[in-house]
Amino acid sequence: MLLQKTRQLARGAILGRASRLLAVASPQTLCKMWSLFEKISSHPNDRREARRFRWLIEQGHPFGKWLQRISAELNPRARAAFVRNIYGHAWFLSRGRRAQFERQHGFEAPHIIVIDVTARCNLKCDGCWAALYDRKTDLPYDLLERAITEAEEQMGIHFFVFSGGEPTVRQDLYALYEAHPGSQFQLYTNGMLIDDQMAAEFGRLGNVMPMVSIEGDRAVTDARRGQGAYDRVMQAMGNLRRHGVLFGFSVTATSGNWGVIMTDQFIQQMIACGCLYGWYFQYIPVGRNPSIELMVTPQQREHLRKRIYYLRNNYPIFVVDFWNDGPEVQGCIAGGRRYFHINNNGDIEPCVFCHFAVDNIRTTTLADALKHPFFRAIREEIPYDGNLLRPCMLIDRPWVFRQHAAKYGARPTHSGAESLLTTLAEGLDQRANQWASIADKCWAARDHMGLYPYPPGDAPAAPAPGVGYQRVASA
Image 1 (cartoon, helix red, strand yellow):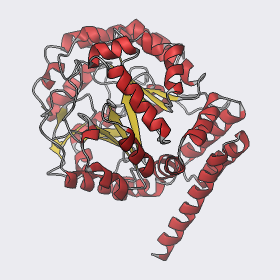
Image 2 (spheres, rainbow, N blue to C red; image 1 turned 180 degrees about the vertical axis):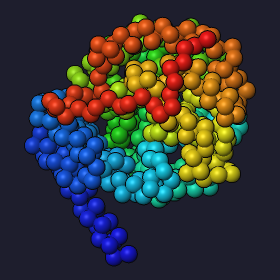
Image 3 (cartoon, one colour; image 1 turned 90 degrees about the vertical axis):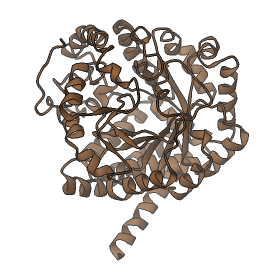
Image 4 (cartoon, rainbow, N blue to C red; image 1 turned 60 degrees about the vertical axis):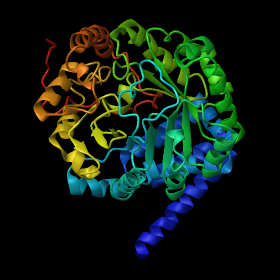
């Protein structure tokens, strides 16, 4: 007990010092902050990342200017939570507990859990991936509390993503955020309900991080979400910025909006609105009215890949591409390798876009669900043949998921989810093979990159092919 208390005090002191360094946010103090994280890190990968970020700041990279924005634009509670939860608890200081979990269970714990806290929503957007779940059901508070507590205490997870539906419809979640100040809660929200009062409460809590969905400019946003939706998104962002909340934007690339969301003008506007993060997704044909034609073409995807790398390396905002950034995370992150998904009915799914399950949180623990052969097989085959530009078992190698689903009896978690295995299978295979013709050439030519460059000679080695993976062509 005494040793544990001493360690807690030491961690608190370290995080307090890092927070004070971020509050000043000169290049010199930011370099000191990353030097501090390098010294306290117990894992060589963490020390490498700390060196990487310090080196970026020394080079005058926009990453350092992004941290200066964090310092200047967040209120003190949000800034402290950013250091404490994202860089402290969720990353550098969770290694001991995560190592203990791995020794006990034989595999590494994931870093993130995405939870659909509700399927209720105040909008009905075409293409919504969650639209066909039971819209009358909220995930009960006691199950949420149990899952988060298990994840924190047994797995060392301190980053939770709440989705839906629209998570801000649930007023009871404020108590949950307050009960877990050492974890960060990222909310994917349409922003329609974020008035000044809600933004003020998020600012008071500090550990709530909204990602406000947008389709691009006014025309494309209003066309999909309804007249006036764009103005309400802008108003929500203004409320969040005024109260010093850590927030960002979320956008789904389709064949219709891909050109708009990649422009310098779009990213400049998001920065002007106060966004500090940006998540780029690609449309996946699941949910309401699934359509292969709405997916970006392979040529459009290649443009997105290079543009997002350009944007985050030229502007002070942290933007991520859920698919094209496979090289940064060394392949697919699904199946509990880095994250997994719990829907509003409690079904435990490999990925937010993979609506199939073999377990439910009502009848199992998180650890036991991750041990299931279905999840284990998904993790063990990653990164397939080693090409990290083709990380996804749904759109890059859809025949792989069909094999997993058939072998382990994974059931669709809502009506229509099975279309990935049936009516959409041929179209997905064609798209996957078209993308492979581009991605394989890029990979062979080493035309790929992670989030940011590394110092010379410090980049990680490419991973070996997945255990048991067999190169299988589509039918």
